[in-house]
Amino acid sequence: MFRYKFQFLFLAVAVLSFVACDDDDTVVEPEEELITTATVTLTPQGGGTTVVLNWVDLDGDGGNAPVITGGTLAANTTYTGDIQVLNESETPSEDITEEIMDEDEEHQFFFSAAAGLNVTTAYTDADADNNPIGLAFTLTTGDASSGDFTVTLRHEPDKGAAGVKDGDITNAGGSTDVEAAYPVTIQ
Image (tube, rainbow, N blue to C red; front, side, top):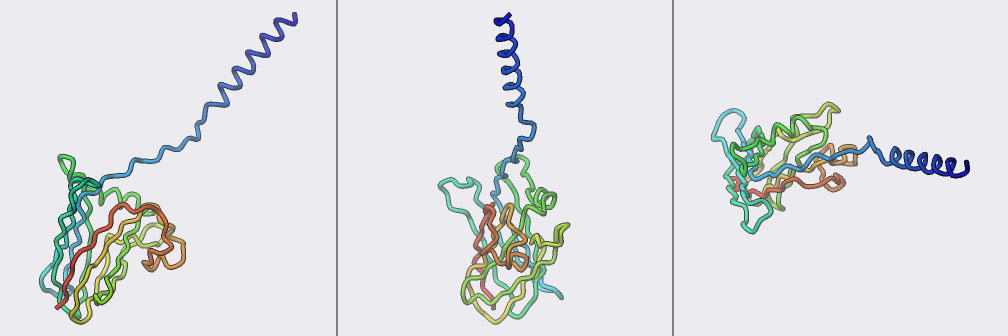
């Protein structure tokens, strides 16, 4: 009789151990997308020449440096900006912009200008929580100057942190999906 109780107890412990290992709450994080191309299109409000800034890094984090195309902007002008990001390592190319729009609460673009470059930016789009995304923005130039205009896409930033809603990347956290520095001249 003792032998059967021992076998029953052993079987019960084995079943409970098996059930306890079944974790239905496991969260599988989506794989990060490869971004090989980041294009910023700047269209002057009121007419003028559209400027296209382009950053292409087809080998990703590989050994080749990205190919960067900057541009010349008119002084004292406001531009409507939009951003498109692609993965051109696939055929056909994958438009990562669509994923960013679908997961807008998990993404935000940040803009910065090198010291001396006279530009300011403002977000013109927002996610469902009224936090900025940055796929659409305005860029306003000042007097003649030159320097890098840097666009950074953060994945899972803390959009509630101080300054983040206003475009301050300092407290944003998250991880950088892409960072592109475009040489810009204002004349």
